[in-house]
Amino acid sequence: MTTNHTSNYAPDISPGMVRLLATAAGLIVANLYYAQTLVGPISAATGLSPQAAGLIVTLTQVGYALGLLFIVPLGDLVENRKLVCTLLLATAAALLAAAFSPNAWLFLAASLGIGLGSVAAQILVPFAAHLSREATRGQAVGKVVSGLLLGIMLARPAASLIADHAGWHTVFGGAAVAILALAFILRNKLPQRVPTSTLSYGKLIGSLWHLLATTPVLRRRAAYHAGLFGSFSLFWTVAPLMLEGPQFHLSGTGIAIFALVGMAGAIASPIAGRLADGGHTLPATAAALVLGIVGFALPLYQPESRAAGIAILTVASIVLDMAVAANLVLGQRAIFSLGAEIRSRLNGIYFALFFAGGALGSAAGAWVFAHHGWHAALLTGMAFPALALLYWFGELAGHKAAQRAA
Image (cartoon, rainbow, N blue to C red; front, top):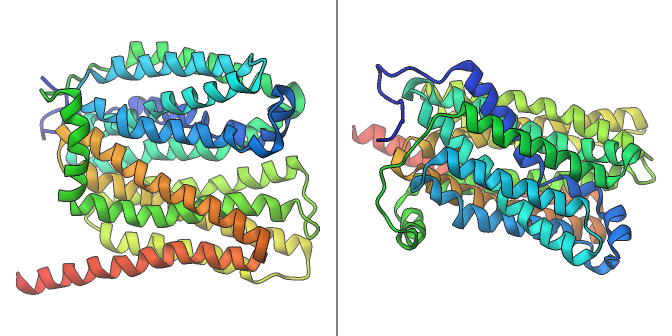
């Protein structure tokens, strides 16, 4: 039996469970981002060459992408609580290995393991959908995604501040302790959920391409969010470079504070969830994509005042974070309505595709900023959600055609 709790008579997910899942998702996904601001000291300590330092971040992302495609689908096949706790124990071990790595090879192997294990967060988000009623599913998912986004946004500044005072080893050692504690808490608090699928693992993985090919909603939502997440990744790649440059001269702590202020955009997640539950996904998606464009249009104006320039960038970061937070919830709400038995696989495909957009955004942003400067990087960032918005007009036309036919 599966404990979907989706009937009108089943109890809805409790506020305490929503808070637990949101906190857990944030703590888990933060593991992917700690190293991004610590590449320099980690490379120096482990003997990694400057040319190979990028592997620290890249291998974590590669591990996460592999986990999305080959581990997250297991949420449709094996008992979810056991799967989550097993992944968290493996993640804690990888974090400890990173904390005590005497050489670059061990740290890079640990980075790959951290990425693989951290996909546990993408089993918890569908868990919230399984425990929710249809009428409130968007709100529950929105709140859990808020926690996930806060984890993403807090990880980099928290890692910088902790490393400044206690060293980078403490960042990974502390994260290992937190994840280990979380594994035992979730073991005691989460209900069991045993999926009804009888597929073998090989057929489960083989079904991913079939799901992508036969699920237009999945393809469309992944394309929308690939555009927004690409712009988000581009912004957070180039904005720190701009802030530490000659125009603003911000310190590492100043950039950390800037990132902390930007996380206010996560408030859009529960709002988007309520809009989705109310049947307003189509216009809300357009609003999110327009906000993504606005987030890059604002900093195109560069005032003489340093304070005004920082203020404009801060507002832009909040607007962009709001767009990403809202659209992520709208997308997950849409794909989670397609069937409980395929929910984990849909979520894995969705995240894998838009993370590819994020990787493209980061790479494009760094290259354009280095070769063509800040304004060119902003225009490149604006192009990502603009292309997604053009794609959205196709959905709008289809929606109007369906209304006329009815």
